[in-house]
Image (cartoon, rainbow, N blue to C red; front, side, top):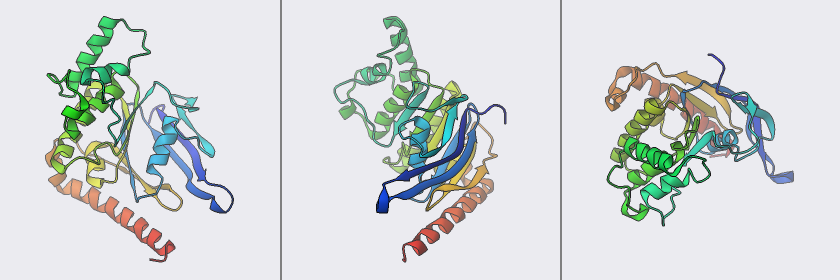
Length: 263
């Protein structure tokens, strides 16, 4: 791999103090290439979101370091866009207003901002809904606005934490295909947290499987499926074999956690 976009170097995170102190993540090493799509999976509580938040600068590692384009992460930055499971839209702003809000501190002219907003409204399939308010949109449409808002100021890294977790299965599949389309158009590096192994494999170039108690790197699974991808790839033997292996990893970690808990 050429010079990586993201370098996670022996990173760990401790929460609490004294008798309540616990090691949530222990010495994770990971490199992500420019324009690569990497999914992160693992059991509940293994540190997926914590790792994502540390890359995003929302949480500081207890030890180790994280670098983006060779520069240490010391806090959030405009090189990173975030999309979370909660839509986090401003209910009093229209679709256009929510997307435009991300450009508030930009030095672009009003006309340039309008052009960018229009481009991303079109990109996420919301043309005709520019003047709609979030309460008038379905869950999938609200998440399209969130994706457009995260990308409109052209970050080089998109961090996504269970962005489709609240959607029904049919809408979720459509949003996954939309995300791949937008990613292929705009070529950003994506770090994507999900509990859904099928989703992780369908989207990613590689799937990172985290171990539990404490969270650390169990395995990295390359996904050698041809791009661009159609959703029917999930029915192929190759896909099923990859899915079977990752589910076995997660089941092993689940049994380990149950044993530690005395279940």
